[in-house]
Image (cartoon, rainbow over all chains, first blue to last red; front, side, top):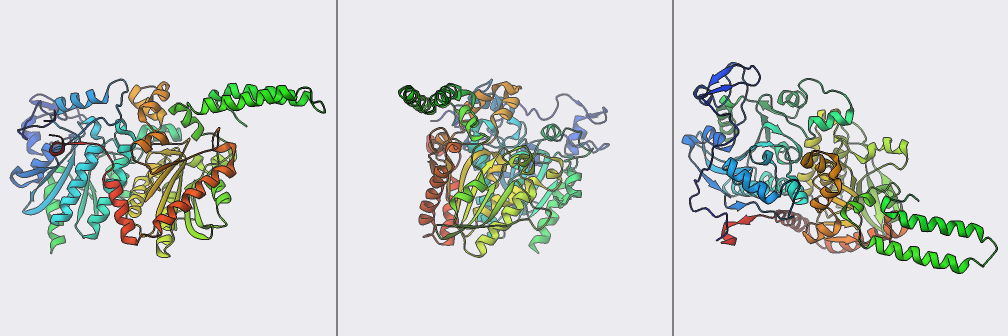
Length: 279
Length: 320
């Protein structure tokens, strides 16, 4: 039996690191504190400032799937280290440590279930796993999600949060861009809807492939969305970037998003969209 | 001829040969010595170039005297009509394309274009295309599809341009659209890395039925310098990064990402433009012979299957 095979698929190791610890949580933008329970009830969005705390697949699935009921697919696809990659750390060790720390096996999970009674396939990325970077496993799981949506004719929702392609798998990571895009082209032929939800951050190869290819491209407020990172752009052009550059609002203004939706309203809005599409 | 750091021993020998040549005008006394040194230089070149490190290949891929897309077009094609503009915003000088014939066969050639001197380099934006470049490529591919003409793309870019206006006009969206289009284009696509294959900027015109790399080129998700700066937190580890990224033609052939390596003249493509272009041309003709037999649906299936298996992962069912 391979080392990764788990008998119990519901194993949860330590809790995720996306959310700060403690009963009281500090809101970065305002410096105010808020009670954890109140924050959770509002889907990890500060009701006062609208600040969206970053959450992962566990939270998005619980927000979107009716009764938090869903079947996870493609979860037996596991990362390996095809290039024997080593920087200051071995990639092998990085994978193991991140798995232990995040309780996740890689940076994307796929659930099949109902959203307000609509059958849907939801693939959600996890930033807490090596910056949500896309390597072979993320690419393959997404392709399984797209294939599943195509076979069942279920609308597909991909929630992105990623710094881009995973360096430690080099060109294999790069090839996940055409690989996922090709699958989306097939999905389109079957006229199955695809909604791309961009959250903070969505950059690099993820933006330059499936994130920008939705029939509907939507985003949470204030998310960083772009191709190149702000630091690289600043270095290239040698001057400061305008305020609000590469935010969701900026992308909406420049015509790359259909709309922005706050997380507490996400499910309702998706449901409405799916309902109108089906009529 | 510009010599790279690892070519210095060759450069010194050739300088000596030149000096002796000058001294020996009209005198044949020095000829044996000159011949001896020439032979030595050849041997030295052979030995240096048969043991290049990955970083040295990167250096060769960036050699300022290397042939660029328009050089290949000039040397490979019987006729060429350059086509300009994306019809929305501008004509990107870092991305060129047009209709051509190669040995009498019509093709649409699209490629990144670098500049040779300072002025040209700026004019071509160092081979870094903006969204309008990718959209020009999109338009030309649609045109090729409409008229049943195969597409040849030549990749040579240090990356898609990371600028403010590029973001404003949707660099990511422009690349993504190309990836999707290319995967289901109804005509053959052949992609060849002729220099630098840097990440999204390269793959943005790089989805093919067959993919080749010239011997001294690189193709990776990130440049060695950027990889070093992110993972080692300093630019100093570019050589280690190049090595870790396994970005050479030989590496990608072993990984089964590419279909073949196109051999370059000894010392690199810049040593002999004609020979390099001939090698590329021969590969295109060979590939076209295969791909021209395939129907549109077969071409699409072929491409989608090719990319579907890319990546390495473990699967419980297979491994337990």
